Image 1: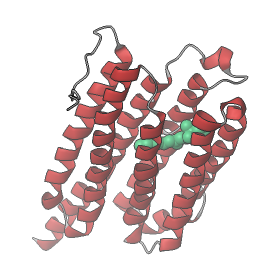
Image 2: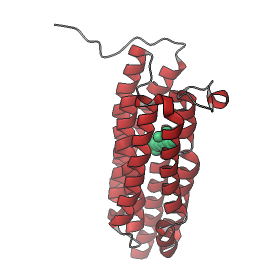
Image 3: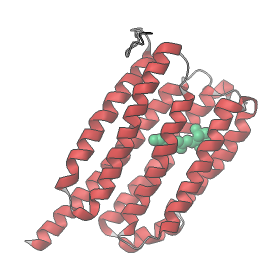
Image 4: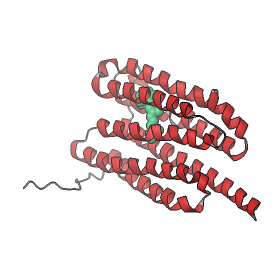
Length: 243
Ligand SMILES: *C/C=C(C)/C=C/C=C(C)/C=C/C1=C(C)CCCC1(C)C
């Protein structure tokens, strides 16, 4: 029988591999934190915290594979990366819906955000893995879908619902909006660093995977912590009311 090692040898000077390794650990630790926090918040927030934990847990498993793939082939694990995103980014759209649901958000808002995010990721994958010649064009289409998400949450219906809700929900919504505008903008930089195009001279020297790994740590763990904070804050309030 063929013996397949579970752990590949890692070069101590391989800083890209290091970020995969640390990313895997950070995602695991965050998952444990979110899962164990579920019972300490109000019941109405438990699903939101659960989804935060699922996002980092799905990422942890993918990072385990991506770390190994990188160590074995010294090549970007594009396929695993995009499967990870295709599962976790729609879940982040679900998070927007879950926190606004208490203020009367409809499911159609969630599906709209999910649809935009799938368009964003599928076109990004085509540009990165299939039609690299036209990476700039696929990146542009992906970018338009990204801006559709930004528009919807910053200025569209989601914003109105958040404003009606006010209080902790509004401030959590605002923080998540900033994550999408600034935190998610890290990804197109990684894309431009890793695909050929007119932007080669600007981002060509950077490593795509290091940028994506940084983006994932900021966005997946940070996003979850914002929701955790909202849940804890508004659970405290209800406890005071009950007392
Ligand atoms: C946890 C993973 C997250 C939050 C991933 C987000 C990914 C993006 C916002 C990717 C966006 C892209 C563009 C806006 C244009 C170039 C192609 C992409 C897919 C890298």
